Length: 165
Image 1 (cartoon, helix red, strand yellow):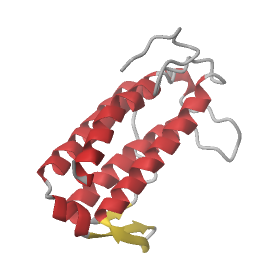
Image 2 (image 1 turned 120 degrees about the vertical axis):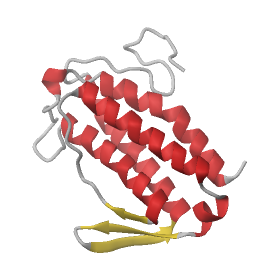
Image 3 (image 1 turned 180 degrees about the vertical axis):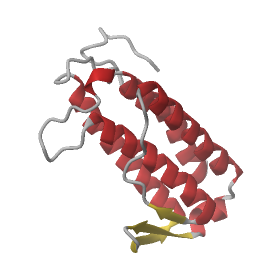
């Protein structure tokens, strides 16, 4: 299995886990945050959608013009945007050659400046690990918001031991 194929496999297995966490956020709690410096649940979800859109751009052009937040109206629309963007990533990855994944240099732009340069492969993994980090942040919001934490990599205390994958 190549690195590109492994990346595609990891993403396709993990996307439903993101969707479960998004769907666990109550509509009336989207603007909740644990403290003033933290992002709201809405901002975290919008940031995760933005990361996926960044990866679509990375796969197409080898560049990211970073999106800090993608607006959405409600959790259902956020899930729809997220899932569609993830399908776009999977389509682009499946069509890409291993050489294009491994060898094409990538640039990460933020506020008009290049802040990182590395191979497209490394940038893709960096973005994925950052998504997992932000999903973890969002999952820690759920109980304090009055919600239930879904199983992510196994059962949670809130789903009574039922595995979802």
